[in-house]
Length: 417
Image 1 (cartoon, rainbow, N blue to C red):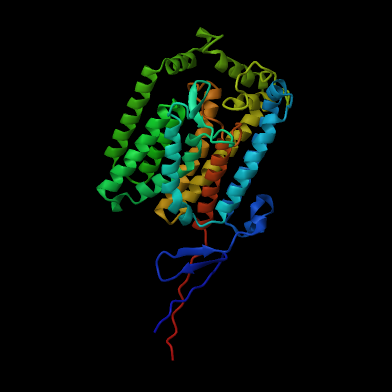
Image 2 (image 1 turned 60 degrees about the horizontal axis):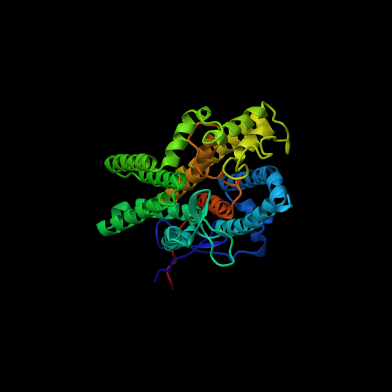
């Protein structure tokens, strides 16, 4: 009787050779050193794309922490008597996110995909819970947060983003194999999610989630009729939302000409443009921003890029855009090299989520897009956004690792004597 033979050509994991393509059964247990990403000794064995993405994520994060320290210090000192108030809390979320990133980069992605639907439904429930009177917490006119006992405020619409990528990649990747009931069920869940976020109201996050779903569906090869009709429905929903909500109409008008109302609706954008323009070519220097001194509102969250551009100028802004371009290029390379269609869609979705949201945030700060409430990933203050961003980066790094594992060769079985 011929016995299947298992062989490991590269990583410390076992592969099942009885199926094609080979499936990862398990990977060696995560060591304590893996919880500290900078000291992870196994990184030297990773593929080049995974290593580059890892270091780009760290550079992105470190620059973001430095800018958050500068942007939040005056406000924190005035409000709490402690200039490090926001920075210290952000560090806690960063440590939680980095521990999760380390674990996820060592966990086969099929296990994460296996839990995506449960996490998706659970976080959808929390998102809808924000709409229940007395449950959601309202900040700046939007009810997007939940206070669960002693825990800090959570924003379910941020935390759900990476799981939306995972689940939509599976749904659209296996679209032809799914029954009509399964297709309609998941399309209904996706629609319910976007509708719930719109009702918070949070048009920017709803639009971003819709764009991610649309791009993943397009990349999966869905018929163009489906893709085009979905785009039309999404555009109609955005127009309807703007027409029904006065503050969204005012944002669009102030975006077109902020000087029509420079002290009210146009104030935020004008101060952002003044900050960016004041940076010049080299910037005013780290910590030397003037607009952050109570001229520019919410300068350490949605408009943190304006402070960055003022302090680091055109050179610093170009560096950030080059970093995003490098990240997008590596993400596309990972997607092209992935052998599993679902992994390809996960790479496309995670890259779109991180880079696309960053470009939308920068577009708002520079006046290229209407004012929205999207944070700048790995820059803006907020625990939910930080954890979701590091989780998303970990998924892309993990796909890069699995896409470049050595091929497994099946040795001829020896007949038993």
